[in-house]
Length: 252
Ligand SMILES: C[S@@+](CC[C@H](N)C(=O)[O-])C[C@H]1O[C@@H](n2cnc3c(N)ncnc32)[C@H](O)[C@@H]1O
Image (tube, rainbow, N blue to C red):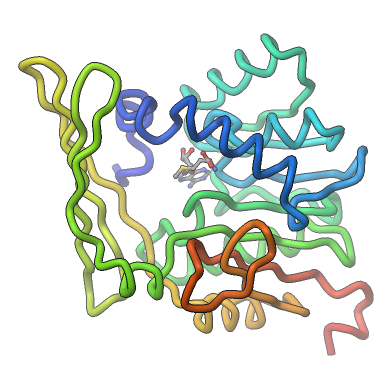
């Protein structure tokens, strides 16, 4: 089993990955970001939607959102929270390496380092090809992730956080000459400790931009924050946006 197929990981660490603070921050980001400013009725695809962190805020603003995730537990939580908030969302259990709905979406998003999870480069490329095929001509893909430059600048030292009922230690490790990154977590509550890890490819801006170009996206631009800040030495995240060509000729 691959680490991301472990339902227990997403359930046991839900309060860490998908806290109320993150949900509130996502709501504020969707309300203010020019990159996520979608007119009502926009068809949005949220790849690796988790418990609906961005799915629900986008739907609340009038977008027609399809959330895709592998984890049944996270989709159940998204469905529950959508029902409680009377928000209409479509949730699909599928592997992003397989999910394609041709020519349908105006915007596809991949948030909080949900891209680059697969060890094999070809599988990450398949996600890009699927996203391109699922976009309507002229539609945009937005990928938000933790990148090489931010890690190199900030140092990636181990950190200890207070979490509900205990403490969490997070220790990052660069793997394979800065190709992959692994975060190891130790969650201690009372006399119980639970360990887990997540792993992803470590892209730089220029590398990810090139991959989108290779997959067939055009007008690829990197940002350093959801306010549309440039990707410079102050960048907090790497956000890459590319478009499906509006016509076949743009593709040439
Ligand atoms: C870091 S979480 C981010 C979730 C959400 N985008 C957010 O911002 O909170 C990554 C998500 O990708 C999902 N995921 C992992 N592998 C997947 C796959 N092969 N296909 C679809 N979803 C997958 C996980 O279940 C998890 O919900």
